[in-house]
Length: 57
Image (cartoon, rainbow, N blue to C red):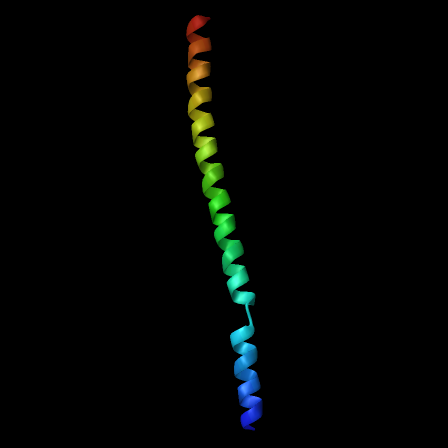
């Protein structure tokens, strides 16, 4: 009985599935933030460009 409990504890301690899922979640969040910043920057630049072209016409 005690040996089974020790083996169960060792299996629980060595299980890294949850940590891997959290790491993938953090990577996905970082990518989402990078995309949001890029879209905001490009959107502002495009708005300025279209304003300039509109004024020139």
